[in-house]
Image 1 (cartoon, protein in one colour):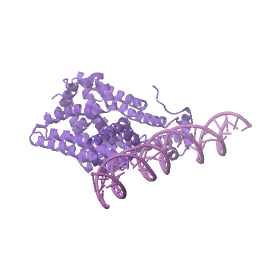
Image 2 (image 1 turned 45 degrees about the horizontal axis):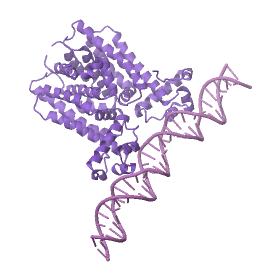
Image 3 (image 1 turned 90 degrees about the horizontal axis):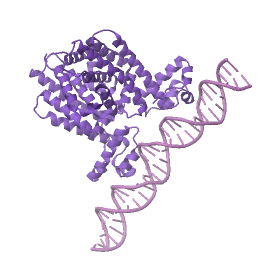
Length: 217
Length: 217
DNA sequence: AGAAAAAGAGCGAATGCTCACTCATTATCG
DNA sequence: CGATAATGAGTGAGCATTCGCTCTTTTTCT
């Protein structure tokens, strides 16, 4: 199955214009979700006509898919950057946590989009995109743990696939907690209003949590 | 701020009819989300006219709020049941995990609703409902950990508020993983197609993870 | 080169469809 | 026979998508 993305005409316009459209659409979708977003307004805010919009994208869904596609690529590249280094497991995890904290603030919109995707029962089309990124991190985390297990760096009495899953769960919810209104409020409920001015504390405690969950003890 | 719930007339109809409406609406909202749900169809599926629907609920949002309200109450009562026992921390946590596994399957719909609520940038109205339940579990987990810390049952070098937060994150994502299509697929990616026929494995490994995260080591 | 023609990018008013919600009418009941 | 409840056709607003048009650029022809 192939996702509907942009039409050829979209590649022919100036990069500036392309970015303007993508940025505007990302903002708008992140704010309103798919259903409640008005593509006419997105066009207007982008400084183009709806007619032009429909020459670049054959449907609202195609625009949405494209936006998601870019979001996913961005997140992926951050992950890859961290993973390709040869730090050991715990160092990599800490880097991911830091990236999540910094990046979520920069890319709040992307994370919101991600949240929307997972909650909505969107068509197979979009859920497919997400399967892409998911399968990347899945493999990454699992093989990281398996590797570490082989090297006796972490305990051997665990199922690396499930532990990778729990790990990812912690990182995803952390991501949400820095990006989505709802989860932000929730973290404040737990740790107080000021928690967002103390990234170090959160990172340190989460590393403590993860570390002793993983290590032989 | 007060949430719009049902009108008085809704209390006057037979319980059977009331349940039929709520059940139908819950199903429908869980399937389609708020925006994409059609209240005319919900009325028809419930076997009442739209006119009647609007005499029971003054708006689509009121119907939605009511549905959420019941969902939250149900989840709350399960939690309370577990919490009021005098089991120790780890036993309680295991019970919660088990409840999440069993209950999510029964109450898939409720969990989906919860997921939709948190992802959508819904009006303050609905986000308020959720703050209700959230503040309950927040308090519960945190004081459980503080208590256990006082009794030297778990390590004392941690911030109980943040550890409670991480704990809750693990439980929430577990809940999602048993209820929402997207997260189900994700868990399958990690642990294989058959994972959903082995609740014990998941529960055991998660307990292992949590246990060593919490214990002195 | 300059004129004429063709291409096609961009425009936005108009179309048609989907609902949330209303209200005139009808049924039910005490 | 009122009063109360229920009905569902109708209303209008919102919005995805279309399409006839304009205006600019490119190509063709003399």
